[in-house]
Length: 244
Ligand SMILES: CC(=O)[C@@H](O)[C@H](O)COP(=O)(O)O
Ligand SMILES: NCC(=O)COP(=O)(O)O
Image 1 (tube, rainbow, N blue to C red):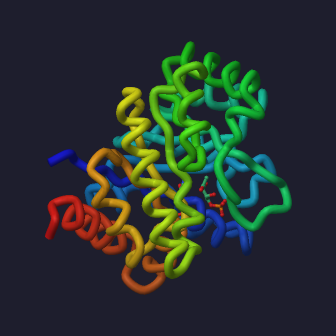
Image 2 (tube, rainbow, N blue to C red):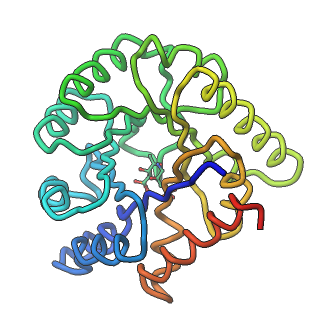
């Protein structure tokens, strides 16, 4: 059985802190609890508008994080400069629009080929493992080797928001995209909009290696705490993968 890993995205713990400009909730305490619960990675998205994670958070988390740090970033010179200074283990290149409520889809690596390739090369040169956050689209995946990224993260937001036949169709698209990328030797991760009900069907796909999950887990943490929210998510992912 292929193992499946969990990266916990703690952006929305910072959203709560930023809502009042307080020092709490403490992101470093969240990292400690999430790691103690067995998560494999900590994911943070330093948005250009700094609406949740702040620059100082990135440096402080890098210092104390004992698991992999996955920094999500837009393909800009500013963000690449910060990543090359902080040196996260992984950098996930994501699309970003200032006015969006949340990330609305995958990066168009065909339309922005030269920019994404140049960003990837700079991150590769700093020994940061690059992941491209893209749609489960065969034509996009076909270009990944030319860009030089070893990992992709498939955007699961469309699947998460769909219902009925459209949901089944999107799940099938994710399955096919995973198999195609795997056949090219690319590591496949997935994330966005995953929760305690829709994650199982994604976790069961054998060649998906890591799920990055944030919003639903922070929401669950309001009632049970982030440690327990992590334990529960890990358990359901692992049960789905084991075929339980
Ligand atoms: C790329 C991605 O899916 C996450 O970074 C997610 O976007 C975090 O939450 P927000 O989109 O609300 O910032
Ligand atoms: N890359 C996806 C991620 O980190 C978490 O997205 P969400 O669970 O907050 O929608």
